[in-house]
Image (tube, rainbow, N blue to C red; front, side, top):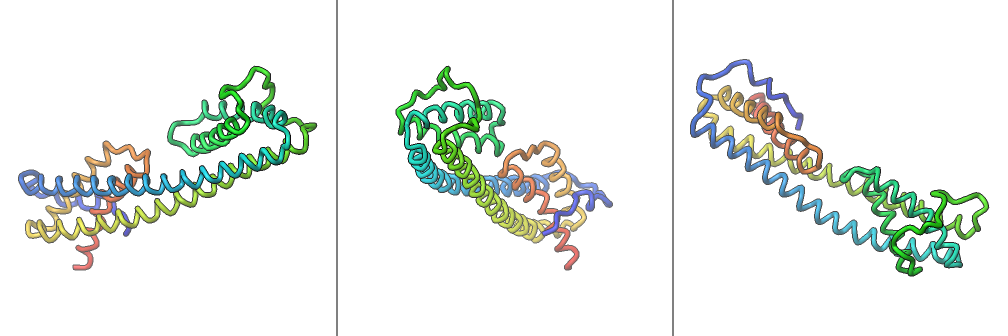
Length: 240
């Protein structure tokens, strides 16, 4: 469904702009937004829980592989300190909801698992001097670093795939719900005149857009559905 600007309906402005019918239309639009947000948040939680379990299993495997690659707890402990300094710096720079934060948090989870395996202190020790592995590091440490980076790429790929599928599926559902809302409004209030309904909807949409800050997926889908109702009504007018 192509989203049409609400200004496309503003050529004619009917005199009646408020009243019980207008308020009922607003409630219908608010209901749509609530349903879209609820759906998005519920699906995000479900898929997020499933991804969390996958990451935990991947992290366990990676930690064991790093331990096996080093063959020496002392070597891995030194490597752990260096990597922890790097991850802690990334966590301080990352924003709360961005991909970099997720990336650094997952790597911190892997280091925590190594903590448990090696019985290391959680805080970085004062002996850590570098955030990278030196060229003369033991071959086992180099292999462990490769495993560490492979784990990072595996998690990134899995996260991107899940996020893309979730966005596409939820966007389709949001547009479908918006189309149903447009049809319902057209049937219920179209007798007042499609110009009146289109203008009233456009005003409501403009008010929603003015205060929307779609920084999250649920908020973005909520705004998409709101704007798509106007598109659905326009399509019904064109087909009529």
